[in-house]
Length: 313
Image 1 (cartoon, rainbow, N blue to C red):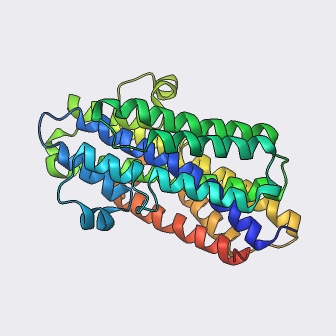
Image 2: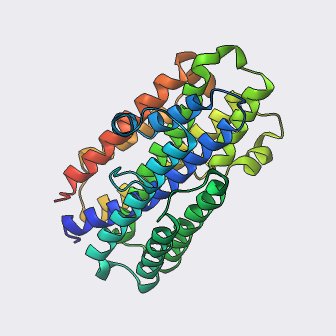
């Protein structure tokens, strides 16, 4: 049986690797949407900070929301524990703590990503270089994931690691969708316009879902279809439903391995049922923002419950 301390290290190692990639995706969403505005891009950047859950900490350092300030805070600033640099450092720290539970390829890919990002994020990023840097961050985390998937035994080490990945990913997809909600708030008259559709397309591109969306819908970018794709589509690897399918699967593997079910199993199943009941129309009718904030809250509660049930201390 895996020690709770080791399970904790594996779970958080993978949460922080996923968080580093997701923070780059969130900045990418803000950058793409800011490019659609001739003025008032500060609103997009403010929405990115709010969706990252960093608005209070950001407000203590900066007075205004600009591409330079927000990207520096979310990518480089190690005083922000969720920044890309802080995340990859925490992931590496946890990986070192559980080094004997990892294959050589997995450890080396984490270490190499840390070195590459440390070099890349050593200085403030010119806004013109931002797309290149964001792509590089996504590429480094993809290399870690590839090494992990290709070499790790599918045992409880793998299960705790995957729980960290999917709990974090579900949180991020909900937050990226919530960016769009905040952008729409000041200008509700844009709904359905060309600009509105371009911004929804930007959301898809930021989660690498632009082409696969067209395979499924073969149509224009409708908010209901895009939200349906990112919330309810069970085959889209960053959707909330996809993430929870695997959260349930890995919790079930742990229940079998340890011959015990815990409160976290029931919490996860309740969230999964919430995603399976009704349609995207029901979610929009009740309020997309309310649904997303409720989901983020319940997803956070599940993470806390997993830590409690499997004694992450």
